[in-house]
Length: 144
Length: 387
Ligand code: SF4
Image (cartoon, rainbow over all chains, first blue to last red; front, side):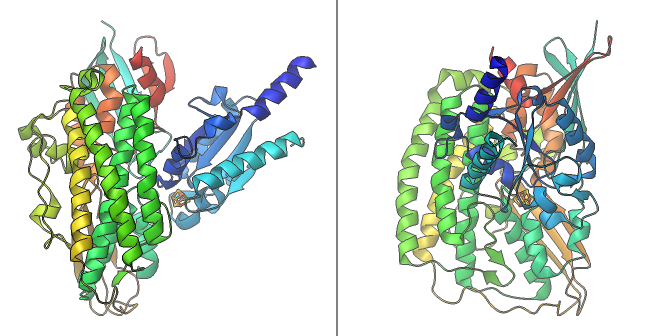
């Protein structure tokens, strides 16, 4: 259908991103934020940061999943309309990173929700985060 | 009259010290605030006493990524004190330089965030553009943009040479010019004055009684700066005067940070000039040579940061580790500031203590009569407030 083709085209050209922090140490978050500012400026690629899960195509998650956050991100994931994609940013979001055996931490994001792209680093540079989004777009345009 | 509870806070646990505030609202005015602390607990203190001292440095660095240098510096100092190690003079100067660069980036970051929250997006972008220059310097010196892992027990990890010194001086002199310009904007701009002056007032007496620290206390006229009161690292040899503003509002707290940017740059320049030559670290045993106690207090970008460690003889892990971070100390003060303010001013007031949870937090508006609940985040709250 035409409308679906237009939607798919728009999604690839301008992915809207929801950023959530599940207990990160802040470094990953400031690097995500830094990607928006003049030096890196992801908006020129059409990537926009959105505050609400209802508007998002992509959920970018930073930080280890703490016990309190697990339920929360599951809910956010359910609230996001399909098709949705998840990027795990930073070692913590991948595996729990430095907080691995802390009692308040469950582990990586993929323990709770499915993840499409992993961006390693502690914290990853803004360039790496942008590269992660580009990889995701490539993956989606090839049909998931 | 319908009373409304406005819940701001992380069920979604944002940061190392996530707070949740329940605001009692009368119309547009906040009448009471109830903070709830301790939402997210990763269990860092416990993990610290289960890992070796060498690994602990990397873990404390991740208590808060924004002021990571402050955490490693405090931890290194506390552990060195317990071990009875004296670090070389040069490493103290290097520590001071990186510590102040870290403060520059942290202050520029929060100044930008506050500007965004009050609806001044241009200034937000400008502050963050200038912050990138500092990030480049930190990367040049330490090898990483954010997590610098620069301080280790017994000294620092890398040395700097003539090339770095000229680079740092060049960057700082051009940044100083721009900061002076921003300061003029903050003094004169009607938008900033309207949104910040007189908002979130905290009197000197209250600040003292509630134990405020850092720029929050200094914005209320309290002369409280660890760098002056109890000099650590190289502060005993460089000139530094605490920046004090007496207005006690959001504007004063921002001005303290702006002036501290300039003061930090002077400290860095002075350190670069005075830096003695010599080794940058001394070897330190892996296990504690004695059962002892180490306490270290420093002035982190957000205020006083305390690390307290107990060592056990011949053990390579601390017996007990305790951290007190500045935001925690500022919570009672921020509750006082919020009483009597408008809902629209909440984001700016919260951000003015630089609590590390400005962007990602969420809020739920609950009408107690109908039980209706709406979830919004701080940014859309800010957006509402711009209308
Ligand atoms: S990956 Fe590293 S920088 Fe990112 S949240 Fe975890 S500890 Fe912090």
